[in-house]
Image (cartoon, rainbow, N blue to C red; front, side, top):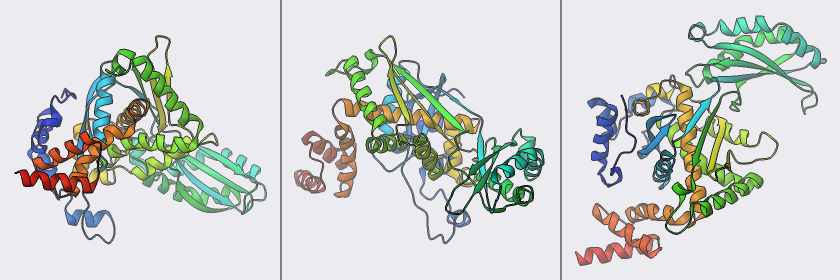
Length: 429
């Protein structure tokens, strides 16, 4: 099905009208529509099977980011998030990018690492060579634990052996199993393989195996996105596109050199990525851990994105980061709304899902840098945050928009101001 991601006048619709528009756009079934329309899509008995000590479920708002075009395909992006301005910023930056051809993405194979820690070695370098010599035996044993994965084209491809000659616990060797997990996130798969080969690793190395666990620094499973925007597209009534580009480059350079700024800069990127990860039932904590570890891979924490100016004067942004996302297993299968989110996205592989997620992160980063380089981050954010404050003050229905608009106009977004405006509004009525 061909989707038009522009969703004209979407913001002006009511939630039920927006849902109906999405139903038509991607062909959701009546059951899927009801799952989105009604609270309690995650039944308590199903939740009870997902985690321990269940007492209820917790809901987040789910929105749809519009205007995304990724590798020439229009994409509607479901995002589950509590923070205002995230969906709006991503949608608006995607609109600007669309005018210049949208986002280009690519990714590496879905390869994960499992680590097997070995202690008690008197000759760690000798153990390393012995393990590498017996690689074929180790691979065969690992792959015997998941024949379905092998039949699907995945499986354990290689091993690495890392030596740490001087640790607080003596010499240490760590075997990495390099596993193509196909459309799974892969944690259970690689952990099972590590457990299976541990006795063989002990036999070959002569040491004692301790930990057998995946690494969330999925540096072999990278997703990339690139966007190019002309000065004409970025220009506003107050500022030229050239001026905005220079401001964005200055803001990015700050994050590139200063870890204190980079932490907030990268948090803004994850503002875009995490909601997609959550909406699709993936492990956002694994994605966060991998992202921040990757940002510090050189020994200094820095920006996950790069922003440049090409020979024509256009702004070019790029991102590359680990993205261990899956379409099968875990909550992607058990949570009804995760399945609906994946249908809305229309993705056919975990790699495609990861590429869309990083494109959203790049869009979110562009939105933050553009705001910082122009009117400041608070103007747009507080205008949207004003709705939350109006709700906190007790506003309902059309009162929410009225109170929020007045606070935004006054540039005074506070709960006590919302209460006063609401009281005056009701007295007038």
